[in-house]
Image 1 (cartoon, rainbow, N blue to C red):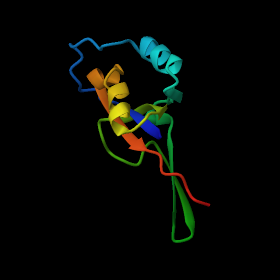
Image 2: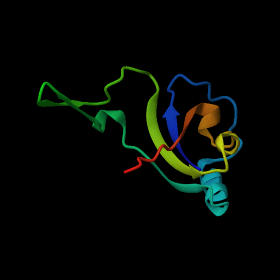
Image 3: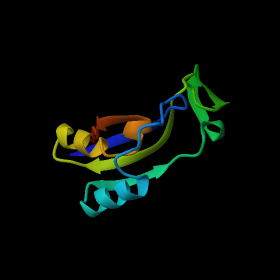
Length: 111
């Protein structure tokens, strides 16, 4: 079962607690285990574009659409047995300590 793990940075997070692993260690561990299928960092939100079509017109604006202090900093595609396994994998990621991780099962289109 595949999961999207959104990695959210929170500039107001308490960073006094040390993460279980560094990002390099987590990446090596999960890649070696065959759990981490793909993942990467994202450019800062200031470089983002938001695209919408409204009333037949395309509207492109700078930056993210949502006004929030947390921003999507990266993502990982995980191959896990189930949601419990995905949670277990996520708890070892450094951003579980210094940010937020959102897990969502992929929902393939049946074309």
